[in-house]
Image (tube, rainbow, N blue to C red; front, side):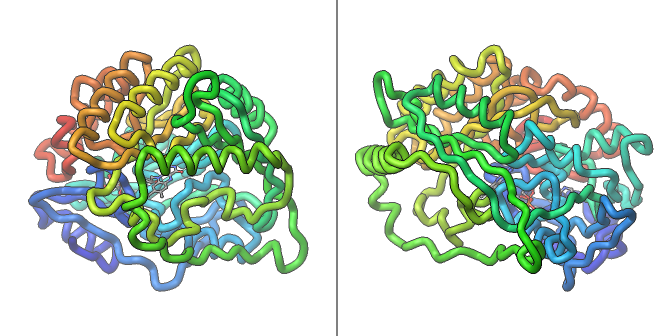
Length: 421
Ligand SMILES: Cc1cc2nc3c(=O)[nH]c(=O)nc-3n(C[C@H](O)[C@H](O)[C@H](O)COP(=O)(O)OP(=O)(O)OC[C@H]3O[C@@H](n4cnc5c(N)ncnc54)[C@H](O)[C@@H]3O)c2cc1C
């Protein structure tokens, strides 16, 4: 890994390296941020999380800034980002390269919708400015392009007023999959941030029962409007992973659902609890020690989503443990040639790694393609070139662009090699 102090050094490294890949904070679940036998180029974190304003509704920031630092700095100025994914350690560069989304995709879209422009370092070492009308192909190819067009150095992002660090949240338990999806749709029309937790361990008529959590920020007063505590959570207790079995998972889900059923409610929450539930624990991945886990995230188009989700859940449950966490969110149509967001429902499943998990992921990928959906590249490690072509209709435009700007494929990743990008 090569740390570059600034864009001049990054440009020099890009010229000198035969094989490189831009790297953010390494939060991607799959192999999009990994390059065997090459250099990972990393822009050093700014010492101070500076933002400079081009206008009152946008800021220019270094791509190395983390979401945690950016949101804290913006909050102190009474501002925030319209789109906030659930991972505070990710960098601005990584979030644009994944075209990341939050729980409000239906209302606000993804990072593509809030990125006005960026500076891109090409494989040649040249730096170009890109926006929707200038170097438009580079703009569309880079957003969601998992780092393969070059390194984003800085970006101009839209900002909105920050209401304050609280939200009014409605929590509703649902008795089966159909009701979970109906409630998800209903709440996504009414509230800003909405997601459904789905319980795949329940069987028979209650298969796919869930809890829909929907919240909208509420306006705070005085000091509260400028303070957002985004500190790291408590350490996850070691050794808990050994207790993760199909039976304990079923008990956990029963308890969780039963607890909510007893008290569907609407009450104020801390906004970070709504947006970043995993950040409550500083190292929750310990739960999956020693082999780790995969996260499979797919997008199913509206016409096929209820049946497709049922099929995917049933398939995932055929694994040794079954998915440990399942979340569904609504999406609207998107853009960006390799961008993931599109109209439909996105289903995310955490799957503990074992000797069969990769085969399971491949079967899930086939099912997603058969249902006209797609798999999120920032979380993928098992797609094939054939499936990718079925899922991403603008793939040939992306490959043409790559051929023109980087014919020798100086920029590569394990993902780009596997998918022949
Ligand atoms: C707990 C958790 C929650 C998550 N929640 C969400 C969510 O709610 N919504 C969502 O959409 N995603 C989510 N993700 C996925 C995450 O947003 C993406 O994986 C994101 O790309 C991570 O950013 P990073 O800085 O860690 O990038 P890395 O993982 O380092 O890199 C990701 C990709 O971006 C490229 N890249 C990184 N920096 C640059 C740059 N400066 N210029 C060009 N390319 C670059 C890399 O080459 C790589 O292909 C989550 C991940 C985790 C771990």
